[in-house]
Amino acid sequence: MNKKDNLKRLFYFGENNKQIKFWYLLRLTPSILIFTGPLLTTLILDKFFPLNKLKTVYFCSFIYIVLIVLRTIQIFVYNQKRAEIMVKEDTTIKNKFFKNVIKTKLSKIDIFHVGELISLNTTESKSASLLFPWSYMRVYPIQYKNVFYTLIIMFFMNYKLALITIPVFFISYFMLKPLYNKNRKIIKKLQDIRLKLSSKTNEFINSYATNKTLRIEDVNLSEIDALLKQTTKEVLKYNRVIYVHKYLFSFISFISTLIIVYVGGLNIASGISSLALIILFRNYISDLDNDMNIIVEFSNLANTNYNDYMKIYSICNLDKEANNGVKKLSKVKSIEFNHVKMSYDGKNEVLKDINLKIDKPIKVALVGKSGCGKSTLVNLIPRFYDITGGNILINDIDYKEYDLHSLRDNIGYVFQEPVIFHKSIMDNIKYGNNKISNEEVIEVCKKIGLHDKIASLDKGYNTIIDIYTDKLSYGEKQLLNFARAILKNTDILILDEVTSNLDLEFEQKVMKATKEVLKNKFSFIIAHRLKTIKNADLIIFIENGKIKEMGTHDELINKNGSYKELYNSKK
Image 1 (cartoon, rainbow, N blue to C red):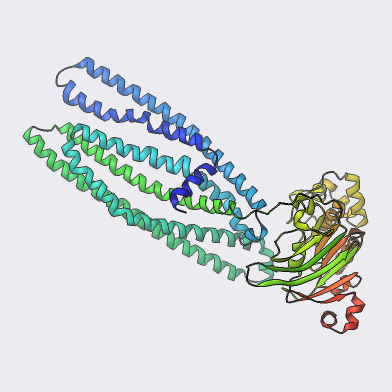
Image 2 (cartoon, rainbow, N blue to C red):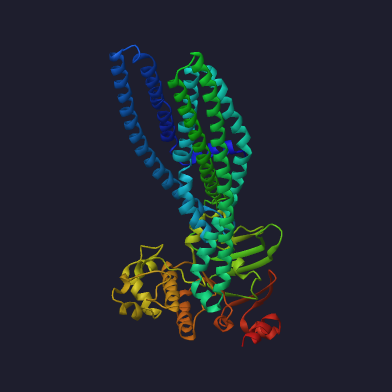
């Protein structure tokens, strides 16, 4: 798709196209009057004063003042409205970007760094919002219009002098086009580096404590430093091209001035032209030079805005989660994996011919070496990813026939890292299920041993927390996630290595919470600490994407196979 088609799509994407068109037209039309100012000045100096037509001089002066007042009012109103459009455009782009990211397939969005997505939804979206109401409006309705009107007036005043000077500017434009194209490539590269820098910075700041522990601050700093040096190099290259562009225009303007002065001087000597006309032409050439430089400057800015807009637009057009199911899922009675295959890239299979059928209630534990496919298997249940072969049945019906929201309403997920929102403790536990009463929250927290700690805080359950707060320990944050899962009361619960980062005390509390959570449910537990899943109803040992062994703990130990070998190595 070419740039013209892309611009058309982007123009309508921001949803302010009608307003932008209106102000484009407004900016194009009335300001033509201001160009009559120099013309009126010339007429007064060359014709009306010499002939002593004072009434005409007063009248022209009055017209000139009126035009300036009208232009001042027009610019004031125009700038006010343009600022409003830019704010609306920025808001629209941010909203659309966020909504589309939320709806995009996880397999498409998880290739982007979090820092990159944050940067796109803040700095880059602000830049994108300037594309039409600022950069393009500045170049096309204003500067190109100024150039066009200036050329018309020059032709009107003396077409011979105009024919001598104007071609120089057109020739220069085509001569400098390669420089403009080169700068476009530099801008694109510079933006990519800045996005990477933003992503890396965000990543290093979020993992600050880990970096300190591993003593790799110098490594991180060297990576940031390398990106900053690369940024500096590209910025200098960009500025160099810009200045070459501007100085060439200035040189061409100087050549045009020399031509005008020389030819005009000859005409003055011959009595063909007046000094006022030559001065006016010199001013018009200066205006052309200024306008052409502004066009270059804003064209490069427009390229930056365009590239940012295209990145946002391309992410907004990634494949969305397909929700073609119409059936409602109220209760889950059985789950079946039927020859299920899964590949992230379409080439390498992460899961190979998975077959499993289970009925409620059951506690299933998934074990195996890192990278064997445990997390991939459980992530297929809430349809975070689409299977590439076979099918998954819930209650003997292909689970794609169920409405996606209905399916996920029946699934709870407790991750290895606690998920904490910047809200009160009460709101954190109720998150996603506000029908729960405060009394129910307190009762669950008592059962899992979290109530006493919360009650000891100054504001109790109304204490505001976030993932970085030190008001709750890591283990207590994980217990808070369990409280949320218990209160959601789903038929399916997935626990992804929830005890791997906990000490013995909190591991025991979490195990107590687990018993409370798993009553009468389907549960899928991924665990490295095998002692936490010894009592599972079914243990599945996965190796290289395949189910190698399956059974209870005692059955698998008696088989003397891979599970027993893994179990003994963990003791």
